[in-house]
Every structure is written in C-alpha cells, then in structure tokens.
Image (cartoon, rainbow, N blue to C red; front, side, top):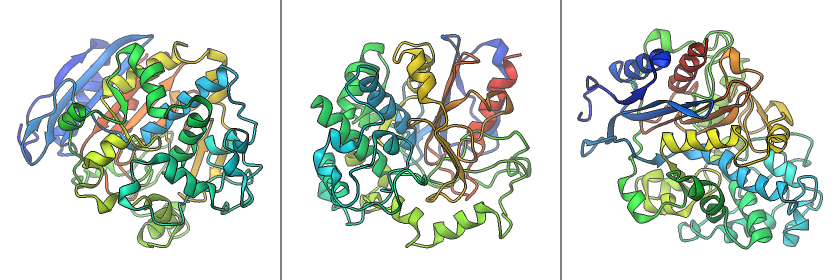
Length: 422
C-alpha cells in the first residue's frame, strides 16, 4: 500500500465473534480515514483481535507491519500512573501525603499542601511550565521538574481540576525518581513491560525509534455519518490534545454556549490556558515534531510512550487481570476522584488516580460507561481496560485527527468490541 492508496486489505487475526471489529477497521481504511493503524483486543486474557494495516511512513510507503510501534502521546499517562501506583502498593508512597514529603524542594511558593493524589488527578494547579523550556533541556526531566518546583500553582490545589497535559509526566517522574532513584521509564521497563515482553517504551532505543511509524497531520473529512456521535456515545477516540470529541448530539459545529465552542476558541488563542499547557516544552521547534528522535527517546511520562497496539492492549490485559496491581489497588485507583468542567480543556473530564474515566474526554459505549478506564492520546490513540467485562484494548495510528471534535475512529472500534460481547 502506498500513500494515498486506501484499497489494500488489512492484516492480522480476528476471532469470528469479533468480525464486526474487522469490518469497522477495514472501513476506516476504505473511507480514507487512516494512513496506518493497528488495533488489538484481549477478552478474559486471551487475544481475540490483532489487526494492522496501511503505511508507517507516507513519504516512503513503508508498510505498517505486525510489530510497528508508534508514539502514543497521552496514552502514556496511564502507564506512568501504574508505575507510581506500584510504589503506593508497596507502601513507599502515600497518595494522601504531600509531594514535598518525597521531593522537599517542591514545597515552595504555596505548594506545601499539594498531595500525590492532586498530581494524579490533575488538581495540582500546575498545568503550565511558565518559563520556556530550551530544546537542549528536553531530555533532562529533573531539570524540567525543577522549573515546576519553583512555580506557584495557578489555582488553589484540590479545589478544581484541569488537564496537566505535559506537566503531569514531569511531576510523576520526579516523585518516582526521589523514591526509587530511577526514572519512570526505567521502572516501567523493569517492572511492567520487560517481564511481560511488551513492546512498550518510555524512552525508545535507537532501533525502535528507527522503525517507529511516522505521525502525519491531516485526516480527510469524515463522511456525514462519522461526524455526529449518538447518545451513549464515543469513547476517547478523539485524542485529548487534538480536543476530545463526539458525545451525545455533538457535531463539528458547536453552539456558542457549548463547551466545545469554548475549546475551539481557546485552541485559536495562543495565550489560552489550553495552549500554554500544550505548548511548553515546545515540541514544534523540533523538525518533525513528535517524530523527532529527541521526543522518542526522552520518554516524557505524560506523552512519550512508543508502543504497539498489541503491547498497549497487553498492558491493560495484565492490569485488569491483577498481574501488575492488586485488584483492590486498581479498584481504588479507577474510582472517580474528580469530574466536571476541566479548567484547561473546558469540556467535562473525569479522573481516577491517573486514569481517565467516562466523560466527554473519554466517551465510552454504554456497556462500558460504569466500568471502563484508560487514557486517550493526541490524534486519536486509545488504551482501555474494563475488568467488569474482561476486556483490554488499544488503538494506535499515525494519521492525526485535526477537527476540534476529534476523531471517532477509536470509538467505533470500541463500540464494535462491546457489541460483540453479546
């Protein structure tokens, strides 16, 4: 398959019970919605869907293969949260304790009472790095964390939540480093990905970066049926940075009093809290942006994970089966801690301890509305677990969604999964 050719068949395995999933996956390519993509599902621990297709690099026509990894942006946050929760389970970290108990320098400028829970639930009031981060500092995570330690919160911590799109990772990482002496990426490799043979990295080695799919801007405008989500509607198919989307009766044109309209306006205002949160460190200063080797190898725990759909689904499989965290720890971690209007993203969001819960930023098919958790990633990627239904799934792609209301590709795949459970 070459760039611009959407007629090639996809590859992989799909259990007959989930034939609808393959139909949806294939249709996305036929409709020109995908460049390259992969989707994987486990049911009760067993692989039932493992699909891939398209091109990994539109410039060269390099095919997307079985093991093609790609930057999954904020799907990373759930993995980073799990690494920190391992320390919670072992009694090394208390989520109710101040961050300064582990990172003393953090206490200044009104942050002495910010807890680990505030960080994991986006209540710390630190969604923005105020000083521009120089490119030469991109791989020095402790140096970026020091910048946050010197700041004052933008709101009273614990009184509101706002998506810490990039800063979340530097905050989590510094807590992990202070407690263990290793980075979040190293902890993930040693305790989560490595023991399970998962192709998942927070800090991609050179050979992985070389074969990673290249992200590509521009999604062809969806057919009319794609642009409106029905009630009960989409999961985090819309990448959260590109603006989460869909929802009951939501179309591409939002009413003036709709929070999606406020989000759209904020996306055009360079000084909005949303753009300030998303724009520093300034990835756009690197040639190729998220494709640049610096981003792939830096392993930012908010958005730097390079993975395959199979590996990310495998992470959620291990999580929901109790292999990584004790079931009681996971149950408490996915309990919604905050929900409602998000100060950064404008629309409603909901979070447990680092995991998204169903809301406009993580819209979920009706059958998963009470039990699904996970995280979206910019452009449309998705990782989702649901212990009540025994499912784990992940979607990765390289054609980034651009509409304010995002993309419903992942939602339609998730919907087909839930519909197949009957």
